[in-house]
Structure formats: C-alpha cells, structure tokens
Image 1 (cartoon, rainbow, N blue to C red):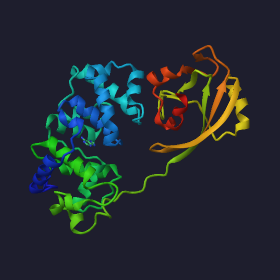
Image 2 (cartoon, rainbow, N blue to C red):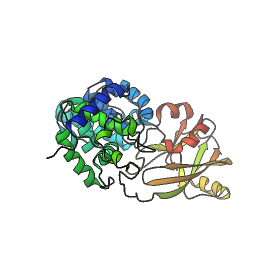
Image 3 (tube, rainbow, N blue to C red):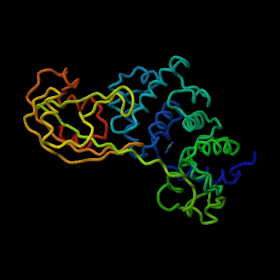
Image 4 (cartoon, protein in one colour):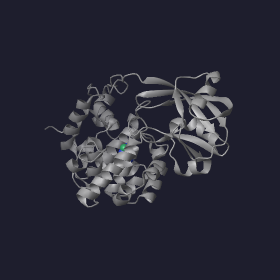
Length: 352
Ligand code: ADE
C-alpha cells in the first residue's frame, strides 16, 4: 500500500518530538503496566488532571498483581474525581486476566492486548508501540484530526469505520521507533494541531506535507458529524445529616456510576414542602430542611440538573439504616474511604 506519510514527514515528526516533547511522568518508562495505566487514565481526561492520579495509583498498585488483588473500595477511592469509573473496574478485570493467563506480565502482542477488558484498538496499539516497540497504529481522536488534515480527507471522524481505515492505512508508515512515532502523533494532536482554536501550523513539522495547511482547510477539516443531544435528568439531592454522620447510598451494580456511593437523590425537582413526607418515607425524622445551590453535571450521554437540600435529622444509632438501605458514615471516614463521584462535588463541601 502507498504510504500515508512520506518517510521525510515521519523523519521530521520524530526530530520535532525529540526536542519538543512534554516531560510527562509516563514518558520516563517503558514498563507496559505503567503505559497501560497512563493510557487508560488519559482517555477523555486532560493530561494535567491525570498526573497526580497516575502517581498515586502506581504507588498504591505498583504492578499487575497488586492491581488484581486491590480491594474494590480502595481502587474506587484512588479513581475518585477522575470519572468514567468503569475504566478502573475494567483495569482490575484485565489485571486478573493478565495474572491468570500471562503470569502477571503484560503480553507483548497487539491482538493479545486487545483481548483484555477495556483495551480497544487505540489502547492496544499505544501499549504495543510505546512499551514494546511493535509497529502498531495508535489512532485516537487527536491522531485522526492530524491525519485528516495532513491527507486533506473529508471522511467523517465520528465513524468507527473511518478510524479503522486510518489505522490500517497508517501501519506501513510506522517507523522502527514505533513508540516515539505513536507519542509524536499524539503530541502533535495535543499541542500543535489542537482540537479547539486555531491550528499552530507555523510550529508544525508536518506543515510542508499537510494538505489542509496548503489549502487553508484547517478550519474545515476534520469533518465530524454531530453527536446525539444528551438526555437531561432532573434530580433532587439530599444531604441527610445527624450532626456527625451523613447518609450515603450505594448505586446499583450496573449502569451509570455502577456500585459507587452517592448522596441520596430522587428523580425530579421536589418542592421544599413535599420533602418532610418524602424523608419520613425513607425512615428518617427531619428536623430542619434548607435549600442549597443548584448544580449541573455533564456525562457523555446524560446531563444531571440538580437541586439540593441539607436535611438535619434526629440522631441515628445504626451505621446501616435498614429502612432506606443507606449507610450513615462519619465524615472523616467518608473522606478517607468512600469514593463519591464528582457529579456531587458542588455538595461534598457541605460534608466537612
Ligand atoms: N493522550 C493519550 N496518550 C497520551 C500520551 N501517551 N501522552 C500524552 N497524552 C496522551
């Protein structure tokens, strides 16, 4: 197949990467476990947000075996605030597979990596190339943008088939130093051929080879079809407290924020005068109810529009509240051990 990128373009890209690469924690290692953790954390999450999580996570779980054996609550606590918690659960499932199937060593094979839970085409390619130097393509949204512009392509990058096509087309352009190439493409997409705002073509080593730069098409390419609008859900969040403890509710094992602890909440926006009955229905005696600020949280496919109340209740003596199925957790304990998703971050400040 004809090469997508000319050898001179690849050469220019690698030279640029050598001098311009950001110094990031996961760029000091070739340990496939560490590369894997970084790539999963970096999915849909900014580099600056990932850095502290990456360090803490690897201190707690330094290798595949440690992750495979991690207590669930500790795992979730270390992921708290990073979002998309299924990533953490998939990591652990995959770690168990790596222990059972590969003796605790990440397999040096693109297909075998793709067979692990939570590892798709991009991540398999990233680990294979960065950690093992295998000439595998690692094409994510950022790399798709770079390729669409360089090649002047109008293919819709929202389509899975476009990603597949570019990945296969890229293979024959991957040089010997596959790891640097993968990271260089990611880097160009992150800091030069940027997703928001104007592309910095003047700084780009690929500019002499770029169709979009030549034809002034960087504000037209890439083409991405519109996403479906998000579903809006109205919720009423309750901070139910007895002075020392706060009520937490564990979400169902499946679906959005599966198995995480949340502040109790009810569908709809409930008026204050309907609340005493609702709260008695849960089995608590409300002493004082106060409306606090509204907040919004945006997930990939859903938006939560929340109103909220603090609810002072009569002291409870049991940690597990049988009628509501909720836990009453002392605030210090809550902070140290329970992962409350950032969807509730507007309200967690009321807890300490
Ligand atoms: N985004 C995805 N993978 C990355 C990496 N290895 N470095 C920086 N940003 C990334």
